[in-house]
Structures are given as structure tokens and as C-alpha cells.
Image (spheres, rainbow, N blue to C red):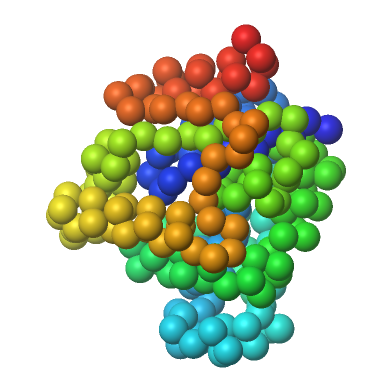
Length: 219
């Protein structure tokens, strides 16, 4: 099996780029951030987001699964419910950053992520894939872009979905998320020593996908 680990900050285009690259290569795409978002959504529903003890207890009654259709598209199933469209709000995004810093949550999702990688050719993206989840991945990429570029992409996505946000609010969220992800005690976001750095600032989607595929192929 070929495992590709893509790490990097929020809004760098990891999910979009990794999904497109996986499609062209015939790999399974695994958005690990979606798993943390699902836990965050469940925490919000159970008023457990600000209470770690309650959050950890909640995990005993939580099931999170990834399902893939024939085209390799990913659906996120939380307690039997498809929540793929419910986990993409700014509130859940910040919640995911919070729960991802809780060791019990990371342990809860780790086996699921590794099991998928063990049984499939995968491109898996997140914050600590190369450092923690798949330390022996065949290819490790740290995908990034400037905060302003990432905020602009996220802003456009949210506006297209009908969300009422300002660019300034989205940029502030990006910077806060970066700080939380890189300063947490457990598995902070950082490049591996053997990661290939890939900066997508100013790139079109096609240019970024081409860059990633070339790295994976060793070109």
C-alpha cells in the first residue's frame, strides 16, 4: 500500500487538493479533519465543548465512521447520521481545533485513521499525519499558503454557502486556528524533518494539484 501524508494549516487547500490528487491517482482520500469536526459537532450538541471531563465521557457513546462511494468520495457518519454538510461551519471549525488538543480524542480516532491507511492506497491530510498518525508514510508533504491567501479562499467558500461573514472575521479565525494548532501540547502542527514543503500561495487549483502529484511520483 502507498500512504501519502499531507499536513499543514487550516485553509491551505489540503482537502481540495488532496481529494483531486487522489482522484487522479486512484487513491482513497481521507480528510482526518472531518473526523475531529464530527467529534466537535457531537460535543456542541452535548454541551461538552468547554468541559473536557464531559467531552471524554461523551466518547463512550460516540461512533464516527468514514464511508466511501464507488468514486472514492468521503461521507462522515456520526452516530449513524451523515453529517458531512453540518461540520463545515466556522463554529465547528474552531471546535475541531479545541477537541483535537484533547489526548483522549486523538487516541479515539487514531486507530480508525491507521486502519484505513493499512488497507488502502491513501492520501490522508490533517495536522499531524506525518508526525503521529502515519510516521512511516511513503511520502510526506507540508502544504501551506499565506494567511491572507487562506482566509480569502475560506471567505469565498463561506459566502458561496450563504454564510454572513466578513473577510476580517475569517482572517482572524485563520490566525487563531494557526496559533491553537501549532501551540497545543499534544501533537502540535509542524513539518516533519522529511516533509517536502509545498506553498500554494497564488496557485490555481490545477497548479497545486499538479505540484502535489509530481511530489508523490518523485518527479
